[in-house]
Image (tube, rainbow, N blue to C red):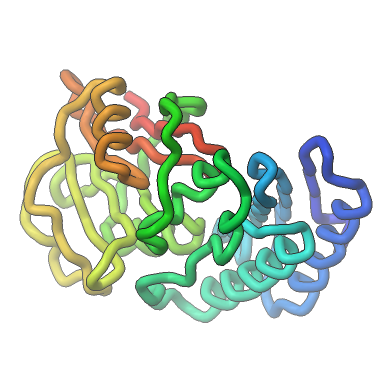
Length: 262
């Protein structure tokens, strides 16, 4: 099984760790009662503060992703293995809503890591309200244009969970508008659309509803709003087209932008 696991590590991480990561992931997958394919592991650093690991796979034809931050390489592998085992079990046993609030991804990663460290874990700030955001100016460092899937909010929530996202952009066929589901209390799931509309019909999961449509903002305006309000992510509409966009904080401290393809 190990030869079927692709591992990519960033500069500064030893080849020995790559071999350990391959063996650990292969051991988790080898004990699964499911068809697991397309295993890809990525390991990177978060400044000088810690390690970011990610595994992508297909389990019985369904895409999953697990992403974990940790203080060191050993903890990174422990958490990645634990997360992969739990995600595979969830996918093969039938989806159930994830509990909220979720276990913080960060634990004690940045307690003594120095002035640059807080930027690394901004994505997890909803689970750790006391975590400060970086003071340095923010900019968009990664852009992704996606053909949005037309699906129900329930299906979008299931995809969000399987892919370990905190927010997921899709198109709601009931309203024919771009929308997001995202992780927030009190139920753990919330639905927002580019245009205000009523709640979904007979949802399978308890889901709160944003009463307002997404604001129309330019990219610069969205960056200002996200950073000024210290938000982990921001759903907004592109002026003119009205298509949905998500601006989010990356673990490296920069910003990412996901935009609906025209």
